[in-house]
Image (cartoon, rainbow, N blue to C red):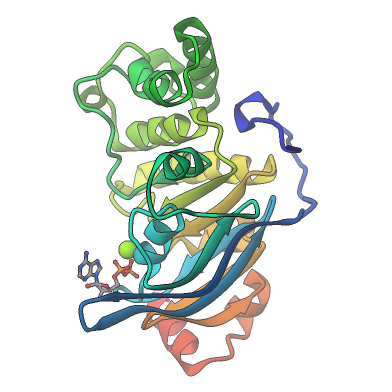
Length: 263
Ligand code: ADP
Ligand code: MG
């Protein structure tokens, strides 16, 4: 166990040169079907500790399914997925434990509507990890501070803006002290003026060394924060490159076509 809990890290401004560690997430020969639809085709992907991988690709290419398989919200038909060297079991107690190591932030914020912001962040650690209430509260407040919404702790989700809710969702995921964070189009449901505040939180997480897999159409974020860009199409990883390489010199016709439509 080497990495400190993300919530315990001080803001490490300007630490652009991040050391990448050992493989943390590894998908080998992963295949998945929805009926006749082959949504994930022979996915091989290794994400190292501290690495930020941005996944892009057209709608329907399998990006969300990929995220969902990584913490077994979706079963796979073939292949293996390991987190920190341990294979994800299909079900049972071990699954719950391993799943707690994978934080997930969705497009729709998915906060508990009838709980306060503070309760949203303390619930998981108290219920699933047996953290004492006082400690969970203290840690939650420091996470809320970190994402800039500590002053909203007593409110309910509906009283917050979309950008604030999404930052709470990030704090809630971090409260479980995950080893890796998955983001599935976290800013797609936000009004433009709120996108930056969420991307800023993600960028600082990345700089602090969090391992992240981020599905996004925000190419500015990809350029700035990604170590690697993965381009998916029709259930396959078509291209894998550094952001600079990918954006300036995409190799596949499909990636070229996709990028030309974004501009
Ligand atoms: P993306 O996130 O890249 O837009 P998805 O992973 O959501 O793509 O979907 C990939 C393909 O799988 C799409 O054709 C989609 O319609 C299909 N799909 C996704 N979820 C389901 C499901 N639960 N049942 C059947 N088909 C699904
Ligand atoms: Mg999707």
